[in-house]
Image 1 (cartoon, rainbow, N blue to C red):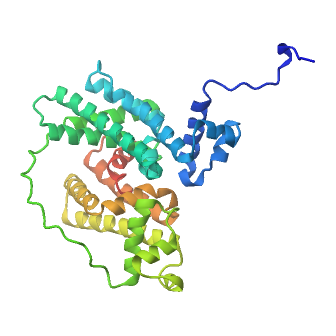
Image 2 (cartoon, one colour):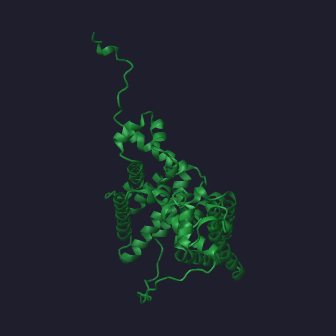
Image 3 (cartoon, helix red, strand yellow):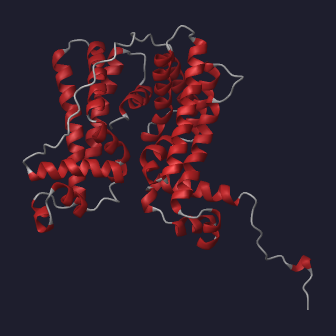
Length: 361
């Protein structure tokens, strides 16, 4: 006997926005726990569907990650593509977005290595397109600015927009937006020195020399592998094989993989403290010390690119001791900034400092 349609009160119909629900659930879980620590089954359970239903929308977790990062880019990059808005309005709109959704930078920097190659390439093109949009807006505002300088300022703007992802500094929403907008506008107005003549390319070296110390060799290879593949995806055996140390001998140098990451993190943080101590020793005025610290920091970031990238991408795996040392280091920058510009309150100073420090800490 047929049942009247009106009696089907218990039938659940698929919402039209199911795909958006999946992307949002995945976004929240991945931001909170990291891509490798979240399963498709957990995402499906959060949405209230079966794993099979989830796979009908996304063929695998990497494809879903691509959709998550794509959506996070939509929230921020849309501002830069507004052709009927000037630079100031676009910056305000973009800052509103990143303060509202602070995870865009973290999703890209920490999780993009897990994307499928074609997806990663496409998302990089989106970032470059956004950079060109900011570059065009800056050059419209400053017609005499050379293109290469406008491009560098545009990347600086995108770095500021990504910075809220990497710290928990809190300000009232409107104040946070205004502070980030002001920082972006100030950067866009900076007078840059003319670019120096292109240097003669150095003779390419094979780089075949390795440390004699097995411990140092293990640490060096581990830093590269962690940055390339992620901490969780790198095995202790892979590190040992790369360094020529296998079997029980590995444990003569490090108690485990976490011990290696701790040593790598300590190395990066120690380099920052050595720089800070030298700058404080060589300067009498806070403003001069801050300028020297910025220059030295940039040089360190350029020289230690792999280590800087590792520390940025593996913050979830850094132990509390290293994290506290990083906070202490940031506090030194805050003190110098406030001594140089007493009108800035401490919460605002922390936000401004973190915009400059998230490249390494």
